[in-house]
Amino acid sequence: MEPLNGERTVLREFRETDLDDYLAITGDDRVTDWMAFDSYDRAKAAGVLTGILERSARTDRSDYMLAVTRRDDDHVIGFARIAPGPPVSGPWSAKLGYAIHADHWGHGFATDAAKVMLRLAFETLHVHRVTAAIGPENAASIAVVKRIGFSYEGHLRDHVFTNGAWRDSLLYSILEDEYADRSSAGHLAP
Image (cartoon, rainbow, N blue to C red; front, side, top):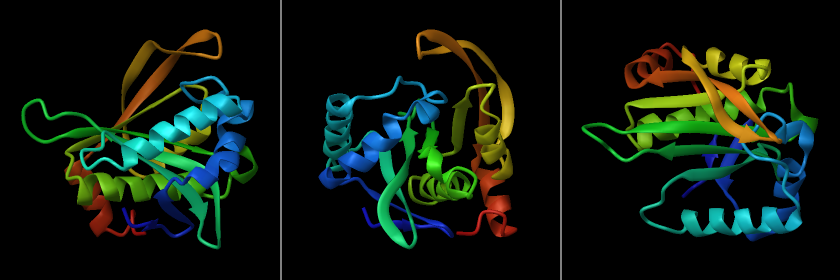
């Protein structure tokens, strides 16, 4: 897959050489406190990265887990994932996830990467609906999805077990026509 450009970021396929950058994100408790997994050690990060590389090489890939870089630097500062679900009866849906290294928070990288992933989901993969499940305390991530047009759908109790405890999630979604309206109005321009 060719790299996808945003205003502030470039999303590209992961490479084996990204392990140190990937570990810096997934091994940082400041980041994983908000994620659905505990911090990784080097061996776990290497194993997960190998899985990402294997899935990305498939023609029938189950997800698009992409490295997030700044436009002026190829070092990985985060990742974004869109995971289409199987079509049950009609158009597909997909789940959105993202994480940015804590040293790069507050600069719009998550918002930009999420916009790029929506473009991939709706314009390339042709899904009908994209959801995001976010911990209720994660105000920054909730602000990201609201900023790009997601609507609140509900509260999922004990949704994920992470960092030694069950965590609730708030479910947000955006539909194909809502994305198209925001896109044509310039709210989601790359």
